[in-house]
Image 1 (cartoon, rainbow, N blue to C red):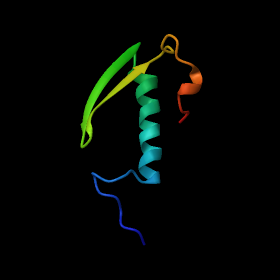
Image 2 (spheres, rainbow, N blue to C red):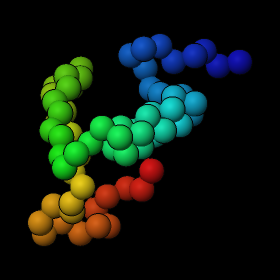
Image 3 (spheres, rainbow, N blue to C red):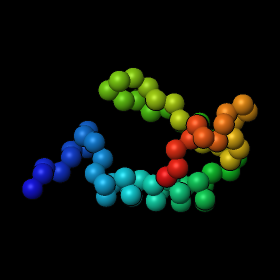
Image 4 (cartoon, rainbow, N blue to C red):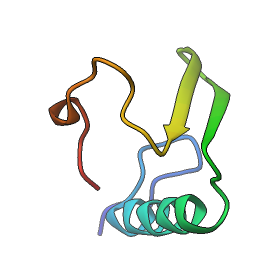
Length: 66
């Protein structure tokens, strides 16, 4: 049996499934037009943009489906 990832380790398959489910709920019920978020990681800040519109000049293929 493999050890369960800790809070600082990689996400398990169950956690990924939960993350995607919560993200969909957030986008369906909380997101109005856009939201910009910054979070710290051991490798530096990560900037995340949620938007209901495809950014100008960005191809839809640049995004991964969840």
